[in-house]
Amino acid sequence: MKSELTLLTDPVFLVLLRMIHLLELQSVVLCAGPEAVNVTCEETYPHSSMDWFNQCSRMEKAQSFIVNILPDCFIVGCPYLAVHLSPAIPVFAVLLFVFVMAMLLRTSFSDPGVLPRALPEEANFIEMEIEAANGNVLAGQRPPPRIKNVQINNQIVKLKYCYTCKIFRPPRASHCSICDNCVDRFDHHCPWVGNCVGKRNYRYFYLFTLSLSLLTIYIFAFDIVHVALRSVDSGFVNTIKETPGTVLEVLVCFFTLWSVVGLTGFHTYLISLNQTTNEDIKGSWSGKNRVQNPYSHKNIIENCCEVLCGPTYPSVLDRRGVMLEDSTSPTPSDASAASTHKSSNPVSQTTKSSAPLIPNEHTPDEAKPSIGAGTQKSTSSPKEEKPPSPTSPNAVAPAVIKESAH
Amino acid sequence: PADTFHNLQELRHSASLATKVFIQRDYSDSTICKFQTKFPAELDSRIERSLFEETVKTLNCYYGEAEKIGGQSYLEGCLACATAYIIFLCMETRYEKILKKISMYIQEQNEKIYAPRGLLLTDPIERGMRVVSFANTWDVFLSVGTTLKELCTIYKL
Image 1 (cartoon, rainbow over the protein chains, first blue to last red):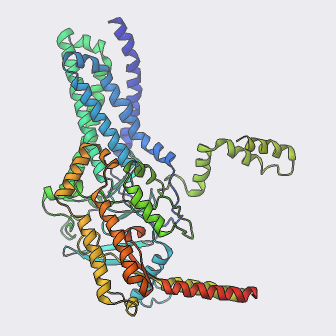
Image 2 (image 1 turned 120 degrees about the vertical axis):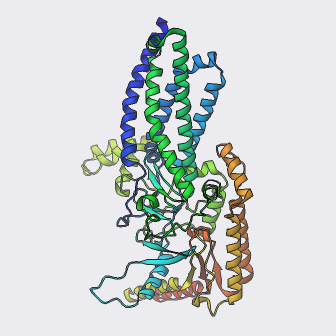
Image 3 (image 1 turned 60 degrees about the horizontal axis):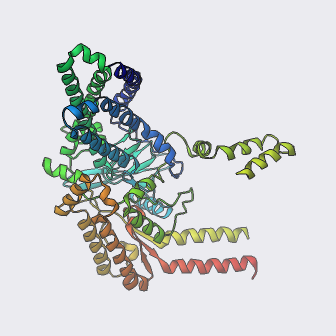
């Protein structure tokens, strides 16, 4: 009994600290939620290569919650339940946890369906087409907005022109200002996962939220069972003294349940109507005067099947190339070889496909020193030393020595 | 020399603009991958309408087959989900298999039909599945030749 108490006091403090952390994170979820990302195309800085480092740090939010809190919940009760009920209980929890982590990693590191920017020739071709269509615009008059109308299932859908990517966005695509890319079937940019959710990774995102809800419910239920069984043996008050951690964690799970299950329920509703979060928030298909959703099959099962069991679309990003201002890209044979070769190896694809996405917090100029600071701290300092004293050989010499040491 | 250099740049620029024709996506059938079969005026003198239409229709068929939602795609999806998508390490998806077929078809079409007519068809996957482009290979040679000639005059070779 005494040894158990000393063992448990530590987890109690840990859980308390993490509960505070969780509440902070929860407030992030409530505020951010399924964001309707502002479609601003003013920023035209070049599409540069992604760094893994920033992607990992963004994903940490979800990971820290799942990895730290949920297992803690269970580890306290595992031995008791395994002995008194069945060893299958913690085993299933572990399997479910592994599935949740796999889905999280897959959502976070896979290409959401980014549409690459138009190469200059294509952009010029489109510009010429637009100018031909607009005819002569009088000086001083604003040119008409660049919109194409297409008919889908007897509904008129407007395709907008993206000034950053220099393309007419396909239907359901939207430009994410955080990732600075147009994403096909754009749903939302998820801060928890640190990535956009689009055509290619929506099903992984949905499975992540679904499995996380199941995991939370499972842990909640078995924590209650654990507390109940102990109470039957030794009374409720004694149980709270023996395992205060479990009782606290029941509370934590209870509050977590609402947000995660709520999100899963919301996305289930969207899937059954074949809508995206973006469309739902903008109210594209709701209201009397608005167009009805042309993508819905009017059948819940068909909609679900299309979204969840549809084909796995290939990534069209050129992962090896870095697009520059004057857009030099690898030869077509390289790009096709890269895409077909890499798409046949999904695990490497998921890590490599994060390459072209740019970090969200920084412009490329700011990003370079931070990446440099992260990975090459030793080499950056000599460079800083050099400029202030170029003439004095003494200052330069140690800098040179530092560099040569690496 | 400055004038000739400026002319050279303009020439290269206009040659590159004239070298490519882009066939855009056809969204009338919702968001599936399909290209417009409308024959562009720029290719009027270069290729027969029927050959062009046949190529684009065959490409549309391939993409339609890849994106078909039916028994095989359900099976693949459910199996992959059950294994937490680890099975994709071993197995090639149906879409990828069809993409390989498409690139082989395009290569074959280029060799048989388009290269003799001085055109080069590019695989849509290289353009983000947005366009099928026809590049004019003869103009490329023409512009290269002209560029070399201009360079010779500049450097008085």
